[in-house]
Image (cartoon, rainbow, N blue to C red; front, top):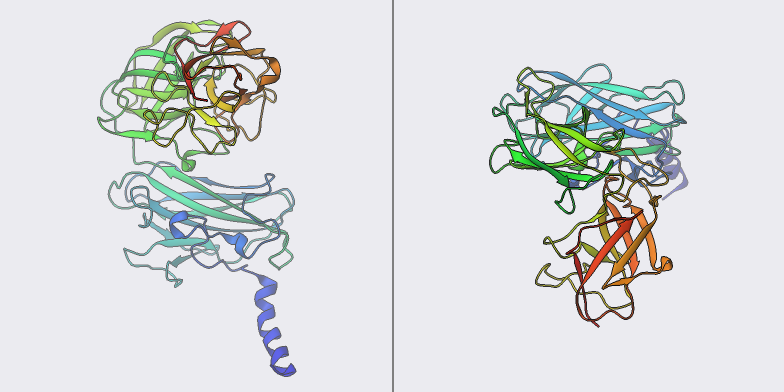
Amino acid sequence: MSLSRLLVSAVLASPIALIAFSTGPPVKRTGAAVDGGLNCSACHRTYAPANSDPRGSVVITADGYVPGVKQLIHVTVSHPEAARWGFQLTARLVSDDSKPAGTFTPDSIVKVLCDSGTPAPCSDTQTEFAEHSNAPRGTPGAGYTFDVTWTPPATDVGDIVFYAAGNAADGNGAPTNDRIYTTSRRISPPCALTQKPSIRSAVNGASFQGAWNVGAMMSVFGANFAPTGKTRAVTAADLVARKFPQSLACIAVQVNGQNAPIAYVQQDQINLQAPSLAGLGTASIVVIANPGTPNELRSDPLSVSTQAAYAPALFTFDGKTAAATTADGKGIVANPNVVAGASPARPGDIVTLYATGLGNTDPAYAPGDIASAAAPATGTLTATVGGITLAAADVLYAGASPGSICGLQQVNLRLPAALPDGDVPVVLAVNGAQSPAGVTIPVKK
């Protein structure tokens, strides 16, 4: 290439490099896996990958939808050092997230593109992307909320998920020193449960026996929690500010009047985390269908007297085989007839067991929080495997399970070298409170 052509090429390219995507990114940059998982960190690479700087975030605020009725979707991008802001948002059916869910309306700040990259209106089968038309500037660190007008589908199409990417930029006009964040948000049509829920029991979520404590995972059993055959587990799109929701599938649970974080709902079972409570002993539990609506239905309260200071219990695969993995988390420790592809542990192996009810951790997490890092339990924990009480040095860790709801805890143990082959019993004890007997781990030399 001649020098003159090189200079011309550089001049033509420079505006793109300087302004980056101040007028909006290409389509399919929200991070949605169905669109290839791409996000804006492909160009804004200084702090790649997305979400690598925990000081900032992108948050979607959206209410449950009424078919055909417009609402504002709020996309808030924040970072303490950013002074210019950008975003991209798309709406999809949870039942098939390759398909669009409703339409966006452009305005002076927001433009709307079809999946072909052309401006809206789009065909009924095209997915849409709302994004900034000219990245606004603001006070450094103040953040910015984009208000996007969205019209849901005209009929009830089940749950809808929004995917968004946010750019917290430094405002230098170049794709450097900008932080990219991605998130998702799941919403539902209006709550329409018609039967009053009823509670039969409320127990420890690992052992399915009585004792539980503040912060422990619990299971509530009863009826009319969901339509027959319908199940609903929390997904990443249900999390707001890294917290589990207090209402899921039109169900809420109150323990002594406090809303509990919920992880799973089916017709006869709810899995939740016990909220922060004062004192010990008796607690009153109420299940609420259609919470916060004119057609709210409340169960009769169930009084339980199983709240304790510590309530250690081990999760199992089948009611008796401890839920366990190898030290690196890549292998499952179980008999292959219990879990396909699993293997027994060997004497002397380090294994990870999953538990709840171990009590407070340091640092502490509030119920519903996702543990971002290791947080050891503050109580004194001992473990007995095959009748052998482990030395303190062989209890390598006991506390929050990083990346999980903080009520899910883990214990890393070095198994005794003298264990015999077979299913050997495992018992945990925290400050004298023992996990229920009958849980085993398979061992084979």
